[in-house]
Length: 311
Image: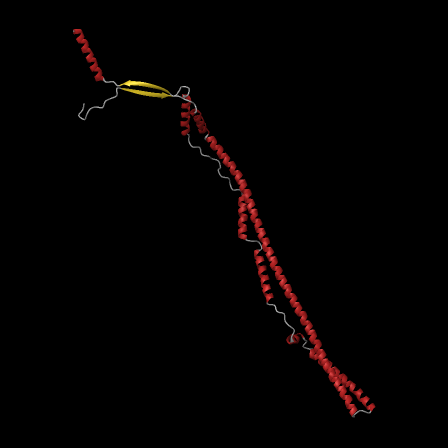
């Protein structure tokens, strides 16, 4: 024994237990292990097919339509806005319209500037006629013996009075007719202006209404273009979805074929796990060999034998 202490006691014997699979089961287990090892060492196989469906022409076309609608705005909106503005301006002008009355200023404006000249001509003609009739009146007075007397003076006065009355009638009648004609012309012009104003306001109202209709039609046209773009996009998405489904199916087939050996191993493993297997056990005992102990035992036995013989 050394100085550090006593040596630990060694076991006198050992039991080694070994378990093994049954002979009928062992080939399947070994085959599965080999196949699993081979499968784990297999190199990665990339998928060389197309994964995403290409964007078809309908999708690009729908985007072009949508972009055109967004950039173009509402068709006819500019014309509709201009028409509405014009109608509003005309309506505002109509609000300030005032109908004029027939007064002295309007009468002077509509009466002929040559009226007095015409009346003067008529008066001169009446005076001329009076003068022509004067000789006849004088002859009648002579025949009646009243020429130069008071009776003749009375007749002359009556004739002069009649002339003045005739001249007054010519002036008054001429002015009255001229006034009435001016009034009629003014009324006709005023009615024409009122009719034109009503027609203008009606046209402005019609223009505003047509502008609104134009804007509504433009909005419907724009909505129709948007609906067409959406419908075209839906068709494109349906086509692309169908193509994508085909590509996905192809990829799934590739993965299924690539992983088929592993799925087979998994299936075989599940089958083997379900088989009731009882491993066989073998136990082997080993005794610890001590040469010193064996030598002492041999010496003691020999000594006893010697002593017995010499007895």
